[in-house]
Length: 51
Image 1 (tube, helix red, strand yellow):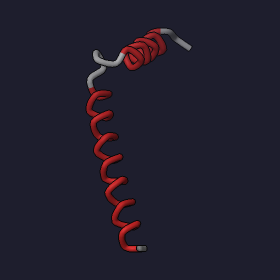
Image 2 (cartoon, helix red, strand yellow):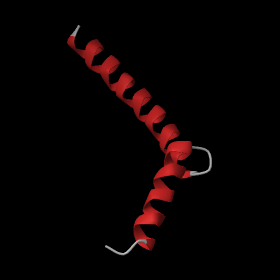
Image 3 (tube, rainbow, N blue to C red):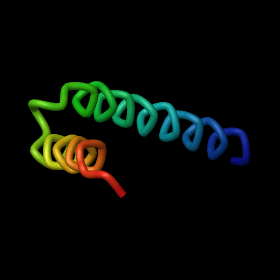
């Protein structure tokens, strides 16, 4: 019983990791995600404005 539960947990972790990687690949493209585009604009405005 213990071995089977350990194997299932490992499988679940691997599956979650794959999903996470897919999300990371999407977030790498800033044009696809509106939130990241807004963040980039905020960063640009911060750089342009003197403190």
